[in-house]
Length: 233
Image (cartoon, rainbow, N blue to C red):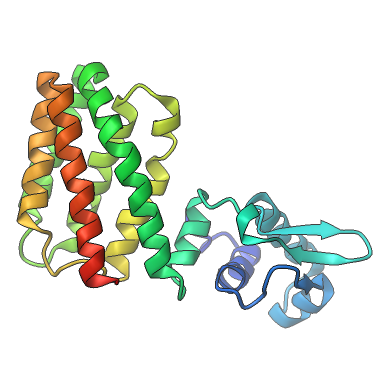
């Protein structure tokens, strides 16, 4: 969920979160809440609420008599959708996109194979709706409309796997797909071969063909990595 529209502490997060993830405040930096409150022209209670959110993401920790300290990157909750969004908005975008796409390539093929074994009739119907939607919006520079169907497709695959750990990664995958679109790490129109592969994955899941579903999804993720080689080397 975007921090926008969540009041003053959301506005503070929109400024402070990206600054931390971009390295403007290196690990070990001490942030004084009183100084930050003055800088952002908010009350101390608003600043404390913003800090609590950053603490929940493991970006910072509060210490009495010390202040708010930026934690090492290795301790950040890198699966938090907001942290992903902030990192994709910064100079670390190519590395972040590649890291997340490698994660997808390791998990999504397995999830697709499981989905072919465990998907309900309702989930198969959802995939059947998503795939034609991707085809219909894959031409004519309709990337935002395509994104809606693409995200929905991958969420269904992860949920249909029957594995709650995979299902919880739906927001992570959604942020990767959205980041590619919003930061123009996409061709003007999606690759037709990739669109066709999604249609075939839906068919394989519906037919209960786990081997084919896994293989086709692996082809999708390999293609996504190859796109990054071209668009975000």
